[in-house]
Length: 253
Image (cartoon, rainbow, N blue to C red; front, top):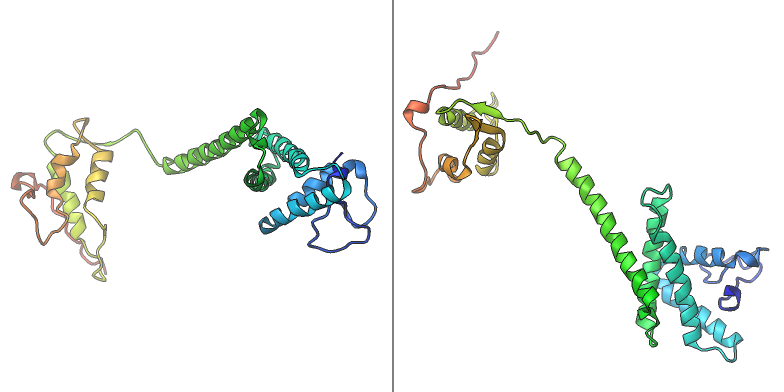
């Protein structure tokens, strides 16, 4: 019975930082487990070891034949059982966020208990399974988050593309290069990118030539990373492909 292992809160003890179990006024001892976990979920992380030591001392002082191993084994079983209950709840449970917080707290307790376990109680089959369930739960949460992130990242993806007639790919590249040189009336770059690869990747991803993919390695020679030093691999758009010229519109009155 939990009430014999853990110190109950004294009546009229209204201290806010108590580690004892229960309410300061009358409460039902048959609900001791519920009050135990209410306290476990309330105390700060830096008092977890104090909690364990206080109730261990209480148990040993009230049981002449008691040992820390007996107390540890019982306490471990309670934490392990409650952790399994929470891990087996549906991730879409209406109390999911609270469940997450409680799981994190019980995992903190298991970390402490494992560090104190001189008897290897935590290596029992049930404990190993509980640890595996805990790890599986964490992985499931990561998968859910990754799926959410992927959905957001691909929200604007499309299977369609802009098709260029065969032989006119370079004419489109020439337009892209011209767009990089355009200025606003205030003298700012109309289209600015840190790297030229943004342009080449955009073209390869969203354009096709005669319904065929455009080779990234082929077109990037037209988009030098440093326009001041073009390098040996740079190539200019052939004159025959410079079919269009972008000019600023005349100012309207």
